[in-house]
Image (cartoon, rainbow, N blue to C red):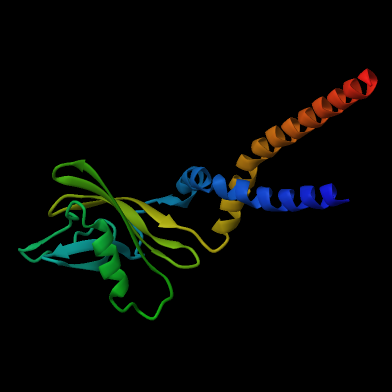
Amino acid sequence: MKRTALRTSLICLLCPLSCLATAPVAQRLSEPLTHKAVDPSSTEPFPVLVIQGDAARVVMTRVGETPDLPSDASFLVPAGAEGRIQNHLNQTPSTGRDGGWVLNVTALAPDRQHVELFWMADGYSGGGYEATATTITPRYRKITGPGFALVLLEKMILLALPLWGIASGLVWWATRVRAAVARQAGAAH
């Protein structure tokens, strides 16, 4: 009876842990599902990050329009400042909405970056664009709703299934080996 309770407890613990272990891979596989092609005729605002000295601000613009920049401002995020800028954006009072800005920057060349900037709350809302010091080129919108968590969960479970299969097979094999050893030991006595 104790073994059955122990097995049940282990299964209840290991199943969710195996799903959590697959979360980074599931997130990478699900990421393309959040991207939507940029519609040049869209009037929906597109967030762009403007860096001016030590300050950063989000400017909402239309696709195809480049916001006016003061002479000392740039669209490029200084190397290594991504975390500091994200924190600065999230400490700035928002429009009363729950959530926060997420900033991901990838250097494409010394004077060109891929910037992903989106508001994360129950879903995502924002976009990815290529930036130089004075220009931006929108590449995609990043949009999801609250149901995206279910897509991620599905991928986590599907990735964990092979782990569960391997673990079940190993337990079955170990049980068979143990039973065979016990039978041989019993026959020897």
